[in-house]
Image 1 (cartoon, helix red, strand yellow):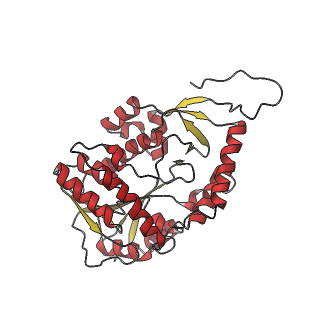
Image 2: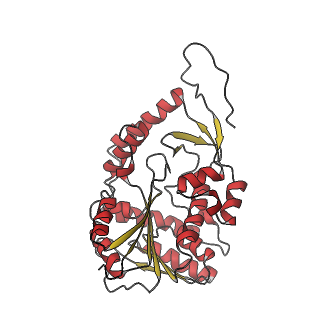
Image 3: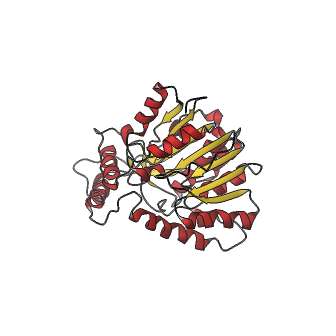
Length: 333
């Protein structure tokens, strides 16, 4: 139950956050994921119970200061733009940091955490900003989310391909959840391939790294039968140039495609927190119009849209965990 502060008369000081303490429970995760509480595997239930998912509402002056800092960040000339120009070099540098962290035989998951999942930072939750009580709140939330998502949609696949595998965190999770499946980790950054290949060598996992460019898909790279495709925060980098990759997937005909990405069309412009996410999204040049492209393909009977679900959870600037789940239809290509 929320712990309420006593009410007072008169204006509050700028330092009065008017915080209410809450905790994400299993029912809250179900609501965020678009499922029911009885749909969670035992490992997810355990993680929800064992980790600290408490958070405080941010109110008054602290909320104003937070919003002001976000607005300044959006307006900053130093904010980089997504795409295949300088972005490639930035991601190569970032994933190389994760690569250098893989130096021991024991898998320390912190070595694979993407740098954009930052500890000790406010997060977005249900169209508002909140401050977690645990510094690793977002990463622990992400672990619950991916363990549920992967077991929900990839259990029947024989081979799994993650395009834009980045730091390798999802490949590592997949390899441990499905030790009998082959997992490919593909990215445009050579450092990512090296991470996946090192994970295979260190742990004996059946994982393989490769180079793949969303803007110029290698049509000679064929997907295995009964395969699954995953992207997480990767297609956002394509702006309005994702069509070649989408066409590639329709032709490759995997059994299921799971895209976990920020979806600008699902924000509410009338909500301040959402409005700022829209501004940040456009300022960074992230992708747009993907749900409409899927709907058009569905109208042409080339794909079937299985699920669309806004995440209502994210980092300080955007909601990066919305779900677009779909599959090519037989003969749709």
